[in-house]
Image (cartoon, rainbow, N blue to C red; front, top):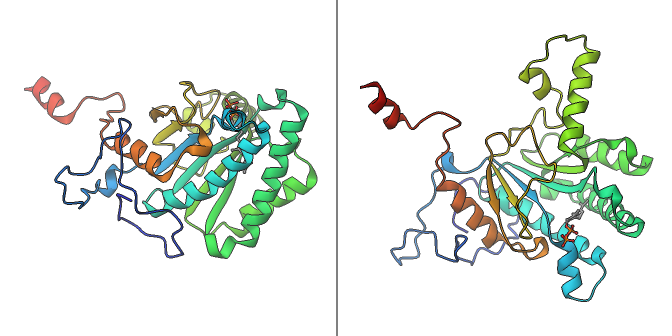
Length: 277
Ligand code: FPP
């Protein structure tokens, strides 16, 4: 859509005919009416975008369907939007697929999500050479059955050389991750734990921190997602239910991100210069 930067060389499935809209439905291009996009400079783009995919249950309910149908549709959206993010120059996508708290859901819904995960991985393994997506999993795998763990491992091993990375957070909790990292440090005999020690033991240890966290479905909270890594992430909340979230909505989130001023606790360079003079 609005970003013509790095293109992936396989078939582009994303609909490129839509114009980019910001959160208010405004066209976020140059406004000249020429239809020629003013592209955000590559360095302004998020490198890593993370999604809290909320709203599947409500999406299904609105259609008189069981909640599982919302998750099924939601899984299809992961496929489409990961590819789209890759096509606009984002190289890491993280999705919150199942939290450590989601085990409290009805057994039927949990089984449906676990089956979706296995189906997703089987499809990914079949289409790996075509899609060229690197799979990584964030979370504690010990609770999954042997078959699911085997599929996760195979997907990680076979995709390790690809650059567009999809982190699937599954049985993931931000607090659980930090506790896990601290315990790993203690096992190494570290007595004075530093931030770097924690970071290198997180599930995301070899992934950049998220630049942008998008939550769909109207709620405005992190729900135990990437608590450590979200330190300076920009947050974007959308009322759209995840199964309806589209390429156009990714554009709106990215356009909003590109307008933010990220200071990381410092001051703008020109303000610093004024204060010094
Ligand atoms: C939150 O929406 C969504 C989840 C807890 C599960 C998300 C899972 C998927 C999109 C599919 C899983 C896919 C793979 C590949 C494992 P909600 O159901 O709580 O929405 P609600 O607030 O409308 O009830």
